[in-house]
Length: 125
Image 1 (cartoon, rainbow, N blue to C red):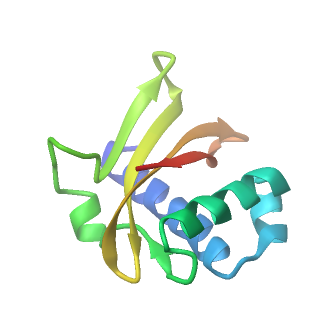
Image 2 (image 1 turned 180 degrees about the vertical axis):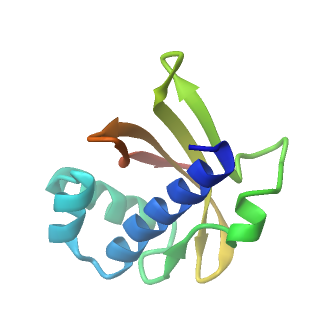
């Protein structure tokens, strides 16, 4: 898969994750993204600490996320992990109500049955 198409696919997967989270659909997050209750509660706590609990989370606009570069902060950066294309790390800027926050979403993608799966790692300020 070409890198641009892969990034586009990764963007869509993370947006799906965030949409389910915005709906507080723990069951689907558990099924589709293997989020357990402890991690879910951790995310809620982190968002509460940042006063973002009642805001709609999203990624930067796709046109910006897939093209812009920022030396100070990852906007939507992917990188190979373990020296293989089978595991791709991701760091991306998190938006709340369409405004940039100080939080960065971290995760990774790994191949399973020929397609990539998103695995949430954490949020950091």
